[in-house]
Length: 381
Image (cartoon, rainbow, N blue to C red):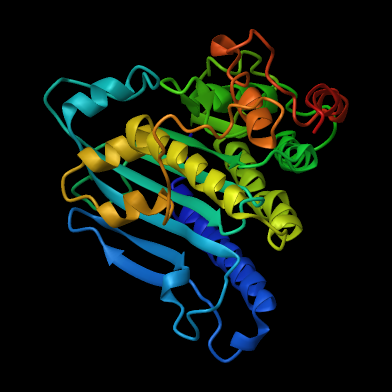
């Protein structure tokens, strides 16, 4: 049975998570530029109302918004931590499509149904080429029957959670990959070493498959976890029903564990790389890799495509994920030398999606230190 308070629970959690994440990044910026104590770099907060129902809070960071000094070099070049809490009516075609994974949704081919969707989406593009881009999204979707005339809470007929987090480095540091994936694996495991053994491997593989750029034959980055349609119903990616959370409250606890793992999974990596020296050529490579990021988001990402096709959508919030600067070069020579650091990254990105690996290799088990050490020796990283 669905918790009638889940909408509020989700809203309370993601609002708190948004505040915690922004506070951490602003503290990093202030520590990096203590001379700006009187006017520290901050996220711009934009609270908005959706005419068709709901609201949101878009919090964005751009080095161009800093008024103190044009010479300041911030840790982040562009970032966004956005929340949306929207509701409205689902048209029959959307209901028909959703019934493929949620058979409990009533469908007569004519009627619309009320829905609620709440989620937090984050993208961080650091300035330093050695600091990786990171993406996160956790969301809750709920469909109800029409509101009753007596004002009672409408019956929930279907609900599910989705989301994930993934890392996109320009230069591969195996220890960073191990830390990021290891933290996510721990969050996916639940309580105890024997709990939820199938979740991390299943969602890691799904992430490698999802963030694949077919026309480049490479993944966008080194992955993380990705999932959708997680509810009490059977899930094709999780065949063992005894090895997964099976109640709404347990699944929400899983979502919170994943969300809470973001800062410990990413901030240590950012702190480790944000002051690394870099050359103009390394900056050039970073901008080329950002071009790949843009290609995936605009051509393949389902959330971006859905948002751009939605009437009266907030385009600025949808395109928040794109970097402030990117680069495309015709037939670029960067990465062609397989012995270069750029070439080694491309070798790894070409093998992460096992079904479409460029050399028939298995995906890298980043949370396995022994497997990562083998990769390090193979590529001389």
